[in-house]
Structure formats: structure tokens, C-alpha cells
Image (cartoon, rainbow, N blue to C red; front, side, top):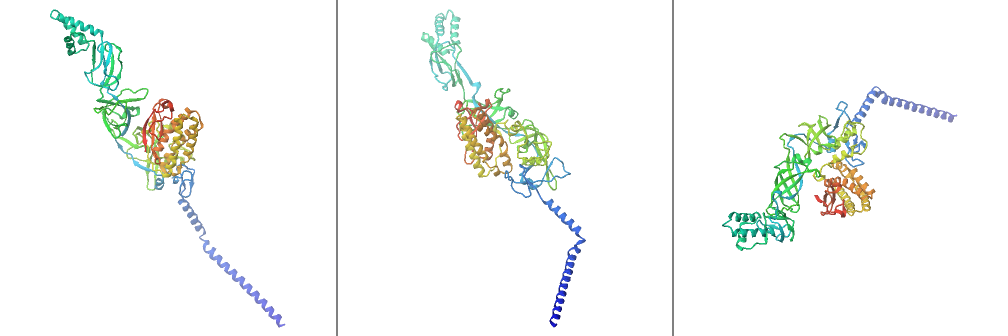
Length: 615
């Protein structure tokens, strides 16, 4: 009985402990809930608002990074473009109150895009004009040596061209029956001189009309015998440039037997193209060199300019007279000259660097900078170009002195404009944002004008870029393969040229443009598609003429690339044939200074000249 009582008490004790534990847990839960929810409940709206605001602030701080040439690339972090390797630039948000044509950029974005600006100023329009020409004999000192008596050439004392003749020395001896008869008449008149002095005088003067000297006539009278051979005496001193008779020939009185030129002074005749005529005036000093006289520089002043342009060559001749007493300058030598020229007007002109102007052939635009406290913006403006100064342009309309424009990185600004769908060089009215890596919708004619093919390539101002050594090696490997293709064209082997063009196309694709940054990258891409198109045409054709036509278009662009970036330890010769391309002229590059013409092969293998040496 006692045991049952004890069991009942233990069970009751366990129930009380369980109830107490449940009550304590319940009270603790209510207290904890009150602490968490009750105290913060009144400020929940405020906390939520702060959290959302914080998120908004964070969103405002986030920057989207894009590529100026591949606007479809958008990343939350800075870095390099996965397509071309260029540094990404911040994608600026539009300000609704700003000019819809403005491209806003932060200082950081400008720095990453290598954008440089400068203020527009007025100055003197100056240009270095490069001229090609050759040495010619002074036309005023070229003489025709003729015979004053008719007859047969019995002896020549001048037997070849280039021989020097001194005035008064005999150049030939002539047998003249008419002169023999005239001498006999003189002897007869001498016999009756006292009775018929006028007859004697007439006979004497007749011999003088045959250009015999008094001394020669007196010698004849003293001898009493007619002289059968008479010397033809040189009228001037100089060099024989043309021999027109041979021994035994019969000649008439007054017939030219030699051409003689005095080369103590000569002419340099320079070709002046139509576009350069405004820069060249009489009195301009020309400094020039001759390839056969390295290290020596000559100079002279232009004393005459042709008033008429040659309808075939489209050039006028500018003449410089040079003293040539040492005879170092010889007719037909090629010369290269320079004129430091200013426009003749005294008015100051607005001159801007060539890199500031984006030229489509039909339109020329610049980007004008506007600054504010927070950032800067650029607005596209169309301008009217004046004369090309080589590395700069005269601006006729569109800019005022004091305005600030972009002079480097203009392609980056224009790409940003396309990205935003704002007016740009390619799309003057704006439109949909650009979505790919292209060069716009310019026609081939516009691209050619933009490339400057209306100028001689060697006269263009080509920028020089510091390229990584790895890129230079790749470019040099492409150049070596290009030489193989060029040699195949020299050999007139269309099939081999097609195979080498395929290899060249692959070598071109192996040049990694991602190694180039900023303007260097832009320059490499410029007309790259045309190079690829020309190589494709050569590789897919076995028509030699079609291959050579594509080769004509390829070379000026490739020359620009080689000159801008240089080769790895190689020297290239930029060569020109004036007769190729239907007499329009065509260029090519070579590793040899000697001419091996790829446009004619064996037909005219050595036709051409070296226009520039690229070290």
C-alpha cells in the first residue's frame, strides 16, 4: 500500500514539471516575438523605404562598360573587349535635359578612349609640297649645227654623241662642186681686179656668203689653186647630243648635221599636279636631291610655270634653272624636290590637324567639345574643307577660332554616337544604335576618297604607332608571304599567285588586332576588309589580269599599314610603275631595290622606280 502511494506521488510530480516547462517556453516565445516584431513594427515602413533607397543608390553607382568598336559588348566591370581586346569604356547615361545630339563623356571615359582635344586657332596656311621631276638641257642653249655649203661629207671629226665641241673647230669636211666653181670665178675676177673692182668684190663676197672666213679666202688666193674640201666650223661650244649624218652622205646647204647643247646651266622640270598648283608660285625656292648623287642637296628658284596643263599627264611643269659647271647634273636624271609653300593670300586661316576630321568623301565632320562642371560633351558638326596641307586641313566654314575640338580618338566618339543612336558620321540623322563591328554604310567611292587615293600614297601623312613586338613579327610574317605572292605575279604565274594569295590571306588573319589599342587599333582596321577582299579575288581567280587589278587596289592600303607600324628588322621598297593600271600608275612593295614589275612581268620587267624606302 505504501508502494502504490509513492508511485502516485511520482507521477503527479512529473506532470507538474512538464506543465512548468511548457509555460516557461510559451512565455519565452512571446517575449522573444515582442522583442523582434513589437519593437520594430512601428518603423517597418521606414526600414523598407531605406532598404529600397539603398538599392537605388547602389544601382546608380553601377556602371555599364562597353567597347567603342563593338557596342554589343556590355559588362558590369571594366576590362578588355572579348572580341578585339580594346579597353572597355563607360556607357554614359543620357541626360534628358541635354542637347539630343551631344555625346556625354566623363574624364575617365575620355582617358580610356585616348581622346585628345585642342582649341581652334587662326594661322598661316603652310604646306610642304613634294615634287618629282628630271634634268633637261636648257632649251635656249641647244643649237643646230648646219652645213653652209652643199656637197658630200668627206670627213667627220665628231663621230659620236656626247663628244665635246669647241667653238670654231672643224666638225666635218665637205666636198662641194659649187664651191670649187665659186673659187675659180674669184681667180678670174682677181685677174681683172684693177679694171673691174666691183666684179672682184662680188666674187669675194660670194665666198663669204658660203661662211668662209677672210683668212680662208686669202689662203685660197695665195695658193692660186681651188680648194676641194672645206671644213664646217662649230658655231658654238658644247656637247653633241645628236649626230645626224655619216661619212659619204650628200647634204644640202643649211642642213643640220649635229645637235649641240651647252650644259653649263641646265633646267630642272618638276611635275606639278592640279591639286598642288595653288601652292606653287614663281620665285618659290625648291630644294632637291638626285638619287645618283646621295648626300648632296641642290636648290634653286622656280622661274617659270606652264600656263597650260598637259591633257595626258594632268600636270604642269615648273622650271628651275641651275648652274652646272661641274656637269654633275646630266639630262634625264630623276630628281625629288620639296617646296615650303604658303598660300598667297595674306588672310589668316583656321587650320586643324588631319586627325580631327572624319571624311566620308561627301561630308567632312569634326566633334566640338563643350565642358561643364561634371563632365564634357561632344557635338558633331559638318565643316567645309579647304586645301589639304598634308598633315592638316584649312577649314573654310563650320568652325570659329577659340572653339575646342577633338583631335585624337574621334572614331571612339563617333562609335559612342552610333551606340546611342545619335547623329554620327555614318548616320547624320541618327537612328538605331549600332550593333556590330563595321565601317558604316559608305560607298566604295566614299571609302576611296576617305583613304586618300586621290593623292600619291607617298605624299600622304601617315601616323606612326608604337606596336607591340609580337604584332610586328606577325605583320612581318604577312609581309614575307605577300612577297611570295608578288613574285608569282612577276613570274606571270596565275596559278602560283592564287596559291600564294591564299597563304597571304591566312597570314593576314593571323595578325592579332587585339594586340593594338586605341587609335592604333582603329588605323589597322581601316580598310582591312578591302585588303581581305583583294586577296580573296587573287586567290579565287586564275585570270592574271584580274589578279593584277586586285593587286593594284591592295598595295596603297598595305603600304599605309607597313609605314604606320613598321616591320621587324626588314627594309621595304615602295615602287611605282607609271604605265601600269591603264597608264594611271600602280604601286607595290619589294625587298629589293631593283625593279621587278609584277604588272608586266617579262614584258617590261624593269619598268618602274623606287618612290620610298621604308626602314
